[in-house]
Image 1: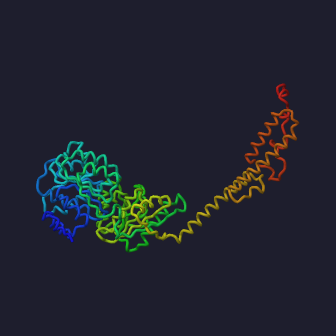
Image 2 (image 1 turned 30 degrees about the vertical axis):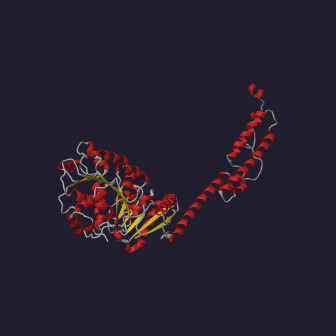
Length: 504
């Protein structure tokens, strides 16, 4: 079995690794570190939680141990898709450089430019940044990338999802052609192939697990959910989430709850706090200081439930997460692998549960196609209360239909027995039949009353009769007698001919 001591790392790096409690490298580390130390480009693909961060930090530190950085010209560059992941990489460098005098700078949003400029001006060996903030510094003339010897793109597929590929391409063009490039990701989408073919030179490909696979130590399950009514679906879904948490009992020591939308993150966190659960939200719209406090509290164990958007799905290393709850089925199947990878890390056991609404079944099918296995279905813990919901809905529906029938009778009592249909379809059919009967009766009455002094007058009466009958006017209670268009008599002017009207 390979040990870290067999990988030709700097002795001071090995000492720091031993202090951190590690003796044996993971498969991705054992495969990536040797070619990286040789200065070759590396394309590393491994499921989340397998130690990809150390796969590039350890050889980088070893190679940078000799040399000195110059002002505004970092010697190495690590690009991360999110602030949290960048901060985590910075922590790893702090851990492994404790016996070496290497400097670093962290360039992320939400932090003062002035503080970051001061670090860059002194010169840094390692620059860890998100693409947007890095380009901000470059465009302000505070940073030069011509001295970069090693460049790392972490979570490359997430860069693609977040729309960072144009920024990545621009950053590549600002670095020397002779740089060493390391790509690491849990998945490798086809779109990434173009980037790797363009910017990597004969890379060593290390793939220690099939693309988009979840750790075997994670127990997966899904609950199929259907709301009683659309306007109640959100609250019922949150009720189901609380039931799933309660069903796990003491086994759920802490958990990350993932939502697709930032608004839902806030709503779910607020709902859990309302019902006495220790929860807090984290997403991209929150202030960076608040995000840092929330994440630190979750890592330290003072916060039990972290409600997150996908900003927390990629690369965050909280070793002892017992559960992951997917409140929503992720829109992108690859995100499912990253989400559940927050639990079951470093060989530990974990549990991932997902709520799948009816409209999300297509997304769930894509997830199962990606991981090439069916996610086990479990029963809804609120199933016993489902009949009550259905009863309530039925009562509401019955009450509503009763009101509808009452209005129908009030507006068209002349229809008599034809109004007694039990559903809206039969009512509509009886309305049509009743209307036809009334029109025929009205026509007959007009023909008998008018002695044809004018065809136009008779036609006008017929038209008004149809119009009145069509609106379902009140009559004598539906006795079936003749229907007269204008009361029980006809005004005399209607019987006048056209010439007589002109004369009058």
